[in-house]
Image (cartoon, rainbow over all chains, first blue to last red):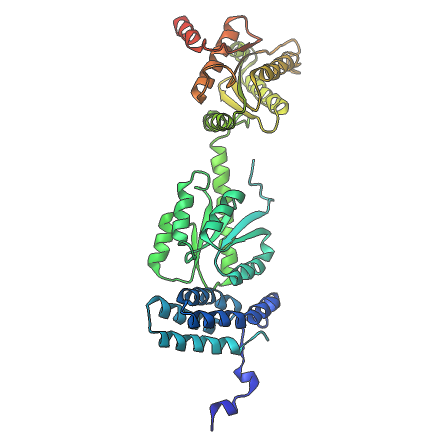
Amino acid sequence: MSRDASRDASRDHLQSEFADDPEMQDLVELFVSELPKRVAVLRSGLESNALEQVQRVAHQLKGASGGYGFPMIGDCAARVEAAVKTGAALEQIRRCVDELAELCRRAAST
Amino acid sequence: MTGSVLERSRVLIVDDSVDIHRLLKIRLRDQNLDIITASTAAEGLRITRETMPDLILLDIDLPDKSGFEVLAELKNDPLTHDLSVIFVSGSVESQDKVRGFDLGAVDYVTKPFDMAELRARVRSALRMQRLVRLLAQRAHLDGLTGLWNRAHLDVRLRECVDAARRHGRSLSLVMCDIDHFKELNDTYGHPFGDHVLQEVARMLEEMARSEDICCRYGGEEFAVILSETDHLEAMKVAERFRARLEGTVWSAHEDLRVTASFGVSSLSLNAIKSPEALLNSTDTALYEAKRTGRNHVVLAQPDASLRLSAVRSAAG
């Protein structure tokens, strides 16, 4: 049985650690709503071989995601940044970006 | 004077991530702070010089240069040398922390933030900054009168002379010495002498404009730096003060008249270009006022300061 088929929507969601913090709700919502834009910038950087752009966005996500209750995104972004920094092969960077994009897609504000 | 306890503190966040700006603005909302943000090192340095924040939360990894370099630049500039900086970084490497502290950071916090801890560290840094500022100010204050002291005069006179010459503005210095102060102390006692010094200081501050710098130069001698004031205007200021002091009734000793002698000098007079020359010529004029009967105002003579100092040293 394919794993995708059995996945139910709520379990697929990556929830912010601060989902219950009223002070953070609007902020987390804004952060999550802007993730697709960030992912798009990552991808376009990859396509145009602008690795500096990839590294910059990954760096920002690494620093901020934990603060919004998504440490997994932060850790994954750190791997993207490290891959670019250490001059890893483009294929490996792409795999890391795919992984990051998938986590971002799953992020949910509630 | 700055740094009242009730004043809102200004905190600058230098971080390339707008997500961090937003996060900290919300998370520090209840701390009674004015929060400003910058996204690059260059912007951070510019805003720092423009706004002189009480505390800077400085990311180490910035797009244009590292936070370490930013801090080193701040520490190299006398204007920003004493500002408090907390490093904010994703790195938990102890060598980064050591480097940060060695450069003069007051604290180091790592991302992701433990918000309760960050708030406490921000409060602690602001408290320390306030104390340091207070201490620096105290070192420049005269304990008896609350005026600025000689050390402050030396620093500010240099700054004022430099600024006035740079912008082609006038600048004057008035020095005043209470007449027969020793007799006054001997006759009425030191507590009354101290009271006179305090009253003279109070009157000086009352008559001065807020931008004037009033100092107790030492003993019974006072000095006032008058920015954007030429020698004629400074003479009027000194004369007004002289007359007021002479007319003051001292409730403890109603028959007593306290007077003072005044020397005035100004950058508008020839050949006076340095703070030392300004101080010397003012002092010489004050000496002339003493020598020629006291209780009056004497203007420094252009180009005569050298000759007069020679007379003075001959007179002992």
